[in-house]
Length: 142
Image (cartoon, helix red, strand yellow):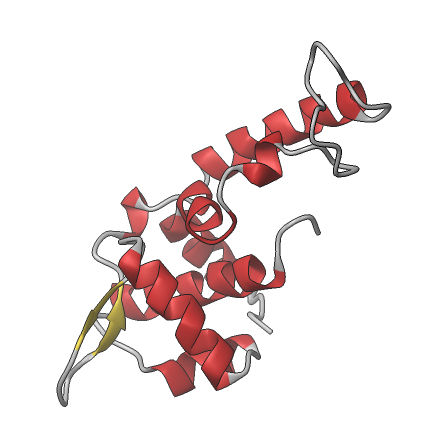
């Protein structure tokens, strides 16, 4: 896919945390890492970024862990922007620094509608909808 590995793991982590949040549970880093098939240290860095960017929340103590305040109000685009920024939707696909509608690279006009649709799809899909889709279809997060 065109997302970074950390962004892919972040999406899976947020979906996992949201599924637990819906059941009024909070989860720790080790459980999340195991559920999404990511190294614990790498998962910790991802969760730290997501918490700093207000995609996730966390609490300390015996009943602490990660949770999401409202899975229906967080969209995939929020996760993508937190992890990868807007570059997935704006940067040149072959890495040119001057690629634009006025000075397009050879792939610009073919990729623009795809990237625009991807932005729309990520903007319209909530984390809660992802949780529902995973549960209804028995998808795995690994």
